[in-house]
Image 1 (cartoon, rainbow, N blue to C red):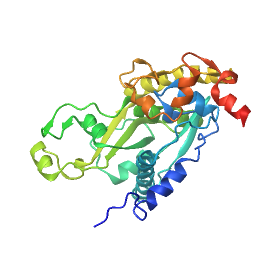
Image 2 (image 1 turned 90 degrees about the vertical axis):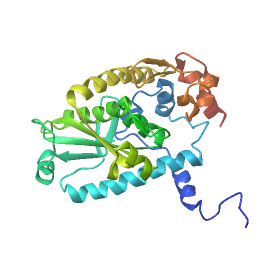
Image 3 (image 1 turned 135 degrees about the vertical axis):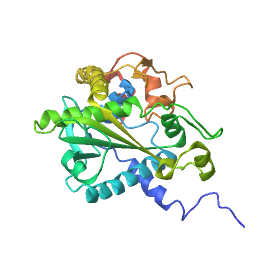
Image 4 (image 1 turned 180 degrees about the horizontal axis):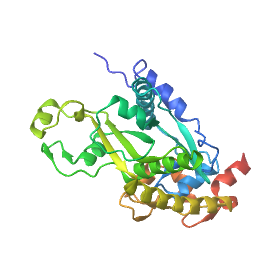
Length: 301
């Protein structure tokens, strides 16, 4: 038996996904910022807005995770279209300098005609659906699971940044379409590893709940999150428009101010940032884009 150090056949899919990951994705409507960066580092968003070339491009593992997420999104959208024929997908919208697109916008008439939902949907006209794929850590955190101990406690629910992203989508869609009224967000979660049958039995988890979850978020919860994050991102957009990279500030999932530092090992956001080396070289505080290393590199080229 010989184990090759470089899988040649098994790596075919990840090779393609990795190649695709190197192609920058434009914002939905040509804006400098995107909804999906909710709660994210202002400096990172600045580099992306100025079309900086990543100093730490996504590796194969990152491309695999995001690529699988895209494959699942597209397959699920196909299924949703058959179940709810009026559903619209990747509906683009913007709020000033921030844009994005939702996974699905589904008419409540279509919902009511197909399902016996145990929810009072109120007077809205549509539901906005957003899907997140994730590893077991994030999924278990949402549901309050401890797989090792086989226990269930109160979960945290969907990440606030995900709710804010979906909420900004909803606000943008409603602003552009007065006939659409979105009261509820539906947040779907899929983990790549199902809870084992033995653990599921001892924890009282049945069927698809071993690897899927779904949450219904009313406007009383999502609108404040979305509005507050839009306000923060407007400030980032203003700095960018004035020719500055914003400071290294983000927001925790609890809504607290977060001062990031790429020279520290305690921030996972920096570990996965595509611009970490550039950020280290540019230093803290607002940085004039003309003084940034990304501009100097372009001048050298």
